[in-house]
Every structure is written in structure tokens, then in C-alpha cells.
Length: 550
Image 1 (cartoon, rainbow, N blue to C red):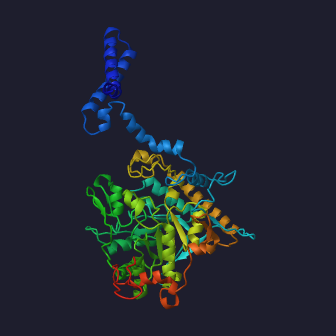
Image 2 (image 1 turned 90 degrees about the horizontal axis):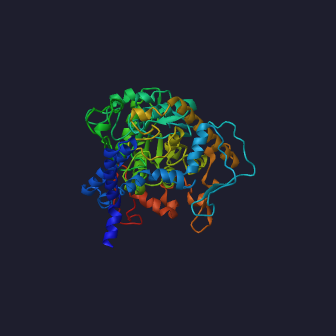
């Protein structure tokens, strides 16, 4: 038995060595091109097999020389085999073939209709649908817009309700940035710069949302602090329409980042305002503020330095009480951000540790519902616009987010698909096969900004057209009129519930009048434990709200 096992393990190596000896002898006796070729192949396999025997890094190869390499080959091509041969149209890994195909079709302007009915499992838990009207409307103008900028803003922005979410130059290639921004210009919508600063490639004429994150890239001092003079110079650019303070992102909330010095090109260094040859650190938290009141002070400062442009926050909800602390600081200081972008943990353009990608942060629907109701409860909802981000690709995704309280939506991967992303999931390797998430010049040249920019604009246009059709089918004049009751949600027991039951709008001002709403005790308890001057929980030793509530 031992001998049989030994033969199975080492037979390929023994066979290769014997074949190499035979072919070598044949080459000496009767030399020919074919014999030389065979000898070369078997000799190479013999060398590989002998090396496998002595190397100590891979146990599989040491026990199974030569043939063990098949395992690593199959492992390398497993994603492609799964995507092209095994994956069904509805498997979300993380986006289904059906969803990706829809984006490709709308971006190319080809037929996007589907024959033979739905393939959705409509009686399973998690299924949701729009309730339609017997008196549908026909919406002609689908250029849906929302004005962002409250009473404290002197330059409000009329934004499209569907825009490009934050993706930095450095994470994306130069050609990808050019295609996205030129597409935003052609389609009349906004392009979020991401935290990596504003590069020369962003200057294609499309509206920009300048993101200011913990690294203060593009507006930082030599030691990484915020530089007001550099920020003022950046914000003066008329292409920049809004300023977004990033507190966290859905892909890895509460986690910083580091760009190795080896990956920093001169263009990246110039955009971020960092030196060459030094690792670029993005801290987990900001250095300009450490309390909710200081955060509101930073909002007011950026609004002033930008000349009155809309300034807002972007975050993935974690401790719910901490967001309530921010809202209390708004009430305390009188400073209110013009907008808040709620990023769901579904976000995924930033590479992240597996635990963060899978298990940290609140999903978009729950986060959006919480932010919307907290602002309602504090009487501030009319002053703050809410954006939503997190796998919002189809018109249904947009409609559902708008119904739950969003005023507009952002998408990152949706627009990546529009410029040719094939979901290879090689974003962090610098080996993107279509030139989107790489700094390799040879790989970048595969992406033509002129052609892809028209696809970006066309995807945006066709998605909003589809949104208009869904809103019209529901009997609405505008998608902003969607409310939770326009949706039904299938529950685990097979029954369905009205959207008002699942994602109810809570009464205006309920957090300020807790005596009138005793059934909202959980909300009041969390509100009582929040403070405007600290993100730490406020101790309440006695009473109905003394239970720790995050």
C-alpha cells in the first residue's frame, strides 16, 4: 500500500526523468527538431519536479512534485471558471450577471428588455416590489434634480438624483477618471473625487464633489494637517460644486489606509500633495476635530473657506448614538451640514480586510432609515438633504432608496460597469484586465476615455428614464414622491408587509418631545445618552433611559 501511494505521488517525476533520459539519448543518436523539443520539455519538467522535492514553502508540491502545480493553476483560474461557466444569472458575487448585463446594455444603448418573465424567487424572504397604480402617469422629462444647499449656503447646487460615487485617482486609472468626468459633463451630473484629491485628469468639465477625508489630500500641510489656504485655492475652482467631509466609508468603516511608496507616481503625489518615496497614510480619524461640536465647527469653516458652497458629511452608520451626538451638535451650534451621504456597508470600491468588508458597518437601507428618522425627530430634516450609496445600480434600487428617505443616490460600481468593468475583482493587484483600477500604463491604454464617456452618460440617461417609468407606473409625477408604502417586502414566514411597517417615517420632532411618544422609548433612550460635546456615551445612572444604548 505504501509502495502504491509512493508511485502515485512520484510517478509524474519518475516518468519525466525517464522520458528526458530517453529523449536525450535519442538526440545524441539521431538528432531531430522533434526530439530536441521533447527533450527540452521533459528536462524542464524533471528540473521542476526535483526542485519541488527540496523546496520547503509548499507542502503539496513536496508531496506531489509536478502534478501538484495543477492545484495552483486551478486556483488561479477559479474566479473566471465560476463567472463564465458555473455562476447563474442571479448569483450575486457581488453583482449578478443579470445586473451587470443590464448596465452594459444601458451603457451601450442596446435592447435592455427581458423576455419570458421574471427569474426572481418572488415568494422567498427578501423579495420586494413596487405597488403600481391603475392610473399611471407618463413622465416626459427624466432629468430629475434636487437642490442641495440650505439657508446657510450661498451657492446651492441643483444636482442630478443619480451621481458618481467617491473613487480616488490612484485607486482608479487616469483614463478611468477622464472617462467618468467627461461622462458626467455629457450627462449633466456630478462626479465625487474620492479622498485622493483632484488630479489633472478630473478637469474634463464635469461637476465635481471634492471629498475631504482624514488625510486632507490636496489641502494638507507637510505633516498631514489641514491647510486652509490650499483648501481655499482648491474650492475656488468653479468645477467644484460641493464639499464632502468623509467620516467613514461602507467598504471599511473605522479603518484607515496606506498607499505604499512603491505605488505612488508623480501624478498621484501631485494630486494628493504628498512627497515621493514615502508611504502615504490615511488615518482612521480626522485630526481637525474630536467632538461633535468641533465637527460642526469644521463644517462651518469649510463652508466659509469655499465661499458658501454646500458642505456635507459622508459616513457609514456604526454606533447610532454617535450620529445622534452630531445631530445634537447641530441643534447646539446652529450649524447644519447641507447634506449627509449615507454609505452602506455594501460599498466595495475600496479594498478592505475581509472582516471589515463582511462584518463592520450598517447596511444602506437600515442606515438611511435611521439617519432620515433621526433628522426628522430633531426637526432638521427639511434643512439637510440626504444622499444614499451602496449597490444602487438599477432604477428599482434608486426608487427604493428615495422611498426610504434619500433625496439622491450615488453609485460607484454601477459606473465602473459602464466603462467596462467585468468584475474580475483584481482591483487591489494593479492588474485590472480592462484598465480601470490600475496604474500600469499598458493596461490603462485598453480604456478609451472618449468611447467610455459616452457610455457613462448613456447609462445615466437610460437609468433615469427607467426610474421615470417606474415612478409613472406607481401613479407619481416625480420619483421624489416615492414613500415607503409604495413598496412591499416579503418576510421570512412568506407573508408580506407594507413599507410603512418595515421602514416607517417617524413623527417630526419626536426626539424633542419624548412625553408625547412613549412607544419610541428605544429612540429616546439613545437620544438621552448622546451629547453634543462628546462622542462618548453620557451616563444616566437612574431612570427609564439608563440602559446603555449604542
